[in-house]
Amino acid sequence: MTQPSLDRASKTNAPQAPPTGLGSGAYKHNVYYSVFSGDWCIGRIYERHGFPDAVRFFWSLHGVVLTRPPSVHTDGHAPTLEEAKEQFQKSWDA
Image (tube, rainbow, N blue to C red; front, top):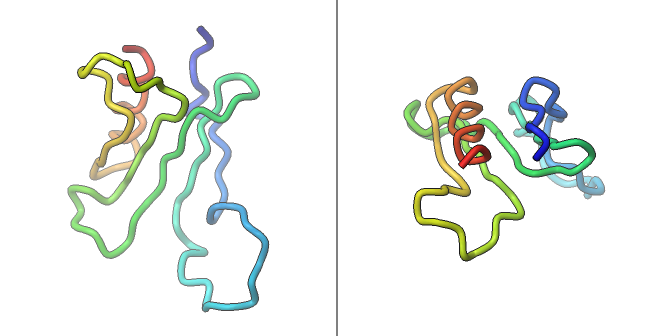
């Protein structure tokens, strides 16, 4: 299985969607990564403002079947980007 590219993750300012012309761009400074394994997007890691520091970053692993072992987590929270990357990698490796 190909190792995910956490260092080469695609950084964007926000999830890509057609502009609506509404809103103030309040999320334009958020850290938002798409994580790839080869050409496949296998997850996301992003920063959440307005949350306690202990849960500032959220990560999710996509495409994991529902019959996974209970020890394999498909999402979580972390206080730093580095810790979110570590948690993501641990779940990917499980």
